[in-house]
Image (cartoon, one colour):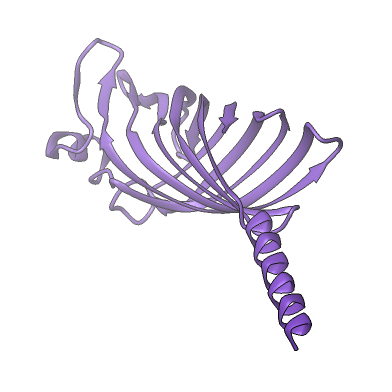
Length: 202
């Protein structure tokens, strides 16, 4: 009886340890560049911006994980035709992508990964600028009159990431595509963003 109890306790401890190994969590920092645009009807160019933030990652299994990132990200477009001017807008968002991913280990230190999922963003800053040097707040009534509708602060979309990791250092590229329109008008455009950067996981 005592022997059976000891075996049961040891089995329970073994399962608990195994579950903790599978359920490990780690954190990291990330940063990089954005190359963003929107499907506007008028001619325009992509805008180069940046992002920086923190990552939390939970390992469901050795090869499967969920991560969430909180980052500040500057995106937008430039050289938008608004005769006789060229316009640029550059909202700064607080973003939270939540992805599920797959990791493949080439060796103990080298891994490849791919993940995808939704993202949520809320703009906390931004200007509407003209090539004559003038500017005004992107979320003001004057900017809404120029853009034909008030620029929305909230954005929701879907994104994916592809990368490699070596000893905790990650090199990655990603793409986000918004489901929400940038302004409160029926024919408004939607944002998209290609980004690349580094991360260090502790």
